[in-house]
Structures are given as C-alpha cells and as structure tokens.
Figure (cartoon, rainbow, N blue to C red):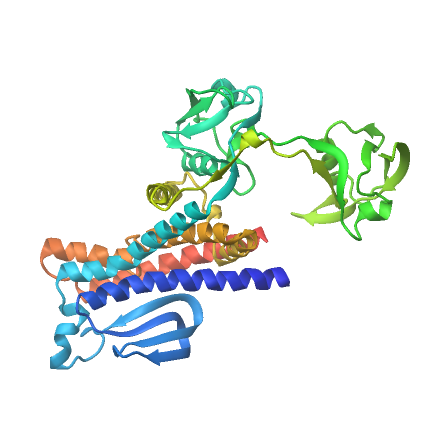
Length: 451
C-alpha cells in the first residue's frame, strides 16, 4: 500500500508540474498577444481551490488532475461586450492564434531542455557500455562484435552509457540495418564501425532486452557464491542460511555459476533442495524449500537471499556531468534525441513496426514517477523531461481535440483564406475524441495487463 501511495503522490506531482508548464505556455503567449484570459485551470471538474488575480484571471485547482485548460475570451463561446472584442481569441490575427496554440507544446519542449540541463549540471553516475559476452551466430557476432568492446556510437549518436545505447537501439525497431562504432577494448584510442543486419531482428520490448536479442550482454562485475543478504522470514532464513556462507552445492550439483543457482530455485517452488555451504571453513548441510511466487499463472521458486558482487572497476565508471555552459548543448542534444525517438516510435506505431500493446497509460507513468523519485532528484528530473517531451509531441498530433488539430485547422485557413466551418470542426472534434478515447482505453488496458 505504501508503494501505491508513493507512486500516486509523485504521479500527481509530475502531472501537476507538466500540466502547469503546458498551460502556462498558452497563457503567457495569449497575454502577450492581448487576449483576455478568463480562467487558468489545473485539472477538470469541480474546483477545490481558486483565486482571482489582479489581472482578472481566475486561477483554479480542480478535482480531476488529468489535464488542464486556459479559458480565453472568445465570441464563439460567449457573448463579448463591444469594448472587449479586440481581446477575444477569435478576433486575433491568424499568426497570433497559431502562436497561442503552439505555445503549450513548445513550453513542454523548453521545460525538457531545462530539466536535462539541471540533470547535466548535477551529474549522473553511469557505467561505460562495455560488452560482456556475445552469443555465437547472433546478429552481433555476425557483425564482428566481440566481448570487451565498448559501444561508443550508434548511427552517429554518441553512447557514453547504457541508457544512451538502449535509447538508440529502441529507435531502430523496424529498421533493416544499424551502424555502430566500437572500441576494440577500453584502452583503445580509436573506434571501428560495424554494420548490423536487422532484417531478421524482432523482439518484444515488454519482455525482452533489445541488446540481448541482438546477441550482446553488458559487462557485469563477477557474482560470487558468497551470501551477502538474507531476507527476514524468507525460505533462505528458515533453511538456516547466514550472511558470508559460501554456496558449495545445490540440489545435488556443484555450484559453479550464480545463474545456475537462480534457475534451480526458480524451477523448484515448494520442493526441498539439499544445500551445502562452507561456513567458517566447515561444510554445513542444509535443506532449502523455495517459496512459490505466481507469475503469469505459473509458480516460480523464490528463496530470499542475494550474493556478493565484485565492485565495478574504476575504468568502467564515469559521471556524466557538465559545467553550466557546456550543459546547454548537451541538454539540447539529449532533448532532440528524445524528440526523435518519441516521434519515430509514434510513426512505427501507426506503421505496425511497434505493437499497440506497448502503449503505456497513467499506471505505468505513476510507477515510473515513484521509482525515479525513489532513486533521487536527478532521476526524477530526467523522468519529467521524458514525459514532457512525450506530452509535447502527442499534443502536436493533427487530431482536432489536441493542439495539433487546431494548428491543422489554422493551416487550412491560411491556404483557403477563410476559417474552417463549424460543422467540419465539430465532426473533427467527434472523430478526434473517439480516437483519443480508444488509445487511452488501450493504454489503460495494457497497464492492467502488466500488473
């Protein structure tokens, strides 16, 4: 329950910030263009707080926090006194109306740049994308990629850490090939290009790693067979396992690799497994009966202990941090990468290269908000930037209920020299609403399916 409340809290914080930024974009440009703003609302429905400012605008916080709006004086909505007609939105020049509508998404992009700028200044600890293993006959192996190589670029985009690598790999879903630059080893002063044939590449982003489906596994420090942690009340504690015990055998087989330990436990829920550990130089025999966790209708064994892991080599670690001036181009570049990735994924969603089941809704966003907030401010800022870019791009889609739909109508007006008829606009709003509601329903269904 505490995790749900934590996620909900930071979901509301994130949503409130991003809605306020988006609507303030509309508000600020409208005021600059001489349009009277009657209400600035965060949320929909019944007001839980409101205040009328000196400028005559009513500032409102409403019950349903899934959006917001800026209500402007408009003759198409209300009767406008003759003395205020010049301040009505519909009476402003076309370029001003377009600027007011576009200002919301633009504000989201600007916010993302500022958020990433702060992230770059604060600094993010990361590890270099060094390959630990390459599967034989895989796409990566056929391209000549070998263990120990460091991925420095993908399709001309620098990849200093694994997050950057994953971003670029996802952007290539549905493509026929991909060029990567790799250093032969971490000490090499040069990089060589490798071309990966992606014609046969396919994977499910929900359950599979893009990197692993290409045949590459990230370098990880060695996992030892020494127990570092035992969960209170777990099957491991009941079996008598202690911190600093070293696993010798499990289920009658010698322990040589931690992966084998995990697979054996997962495959034997509620089944007694003989276990031998070395404790203070003495072999101790125990009996471990893993608990059963149900995943996708199948019982999976769980023991409740974790191993010691060797520390990361200093040569593999880095901190992505910039000075205030150097952080500006870095933030711009990061924002552009996210914009390109998001726009590309939306395009591939419509072309079928990305499945509709990959759409995420408010539950997934809430989980992301809570998780990144738990990690720290810098990660939460990165999350806000990512969602802000997504919000800006989605609002630019040419659907009449969105800002992009209004801009589409203004574009038609610019060509025909007359406004789009109210009948056509009304039909457009109906169709646009139906599409948006359908996509929202699919996204929410996907969220529940992932629970």
